Length: 280
Image 1 (tube, rainbow, N blue to C red):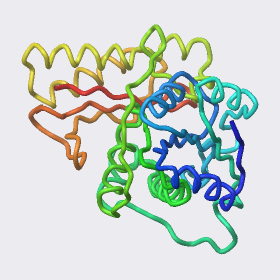
Image 2: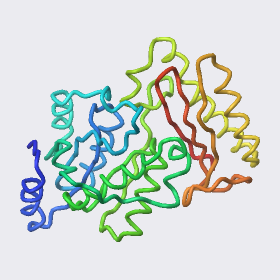
Image 3: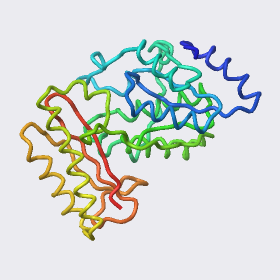
Image 4: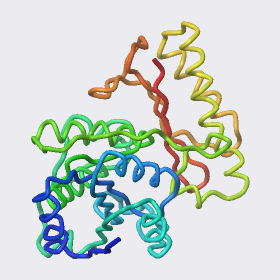
């Protein structure tokens, strides 16, 4: 496995693989790998000849009061885990490499970026689509693997790929969870002991809501109320949103139909957790 830190070298080493008609799979990450990240690497390994993982904590998707400086990092551990998963290259640029002086060009989805997580995180998805488009242009992958946990992000990336004609297949990997259902996330390390004990209420609420839909409930309002009240029942939860939307343009629905999913964002102390479940 090779670690590459600059754009010209990354482009150069991949040219030989393209000349040999090798399929290049790509997994963009911000590092501090957990089983969720590793599962995406496994998917890329299964579907590709060459696997590239980017490791870059992207400053443009963090707001001024968010956790950029304290976002967990452990490059040596990440390198070891990626190599065990059969990754061929880690692209590990610094901020100056990705955002040179006088940088002022951004990519933004005008319809989807202000919904759900975007309603309270101004310019977050502008940062995501900008960095992903830059990475696609640098890596030029045949396929890229994203996680279902960030469902809104995946939908926005799919829309960007379609709208801007990127020749990249987007593949989604399942949410990987702890034994008690909490979705694996790099930010879980921020939770104190009491918050960690309470956080699985998110998944409990979502799975119980899904069971209600499977039994025939179709009122989005009733399901939203159920999820909200279930999560709100624990002492230290602070709900940012509970929404039920369709999976193309993230529009809220009144009646649950195939493709609809429930998405939530909940604060436990200073830690913001997101999760979602496809309802039907």
